Length: 367
Image (cartoon, rainbow, N blue to C red):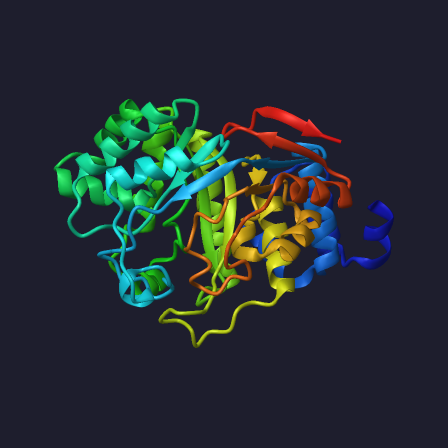
């Protein structure tokens, strides 16, 4: 690494790179210098070094399935391909139907629950859903409801968001997913998701969850109208939240897909920009342990390539239980990844495949 820096890299990039190599935090300005001036190969090398320092050669995955209770939604996000008036078909699962899904689910450590913000369902429906799942499969970790959904539950119930979280935790909620962050810059949110919980609300709800012992992930929707300044600002707010609470388990960049939504006129980013974004995320978020590549959104080939750019987690088996990204034009229209595929990806990239639980505790390792 030092030889590579001395021969090929400009002095400013070299200085920043040495900070990264010595595990020193970089500033937002330094991150922007890397973005605009460092070659993707160097970013990959630096991100991989950070990844090795934090996670060794582990490649994590989980057995999981999704429940998407409804695609009816009060919000009109321009990037959404999931909402019922976009897809032309609506669903709203009853508790009996959710019971059937859970009963039929195979071996799993986690269920991921998120969907549209339903115009009519009240808080008790979601509370009873969590209680039902926990009664049916007490061993399953329930990761459910974006900050946007939590905010809506509070508004409809007359409770505060922290009261909603407290009651859901009592019912059996274990963690929050990271959805709903989109991009934090308010001028962009006014265009792409004007009526959705804002950045301050998202960060506050995650902070409240962490105070209650409910851990969470964080996300960023990238590749639409935002600039690199907006992306780094977003990462900085995530890093600040983690400095304050320590409750984030993983950061998940989510790539904008342009099929079947109001932003279909925008071209999707090329793969090289995905590589750059993931690498910078790994370098900048020095206090978030895991960078996850969500393979149903990226595709399996791109996900594997991202392992050289800071990624240590590629999510889970999924078992064809999510429609959110398939409706937006993702490569895998029926997302399923089996155990042998995970192990093969790890072996091809000299990683140790580890099946984990939701708290990143090792359940099984594979040679």
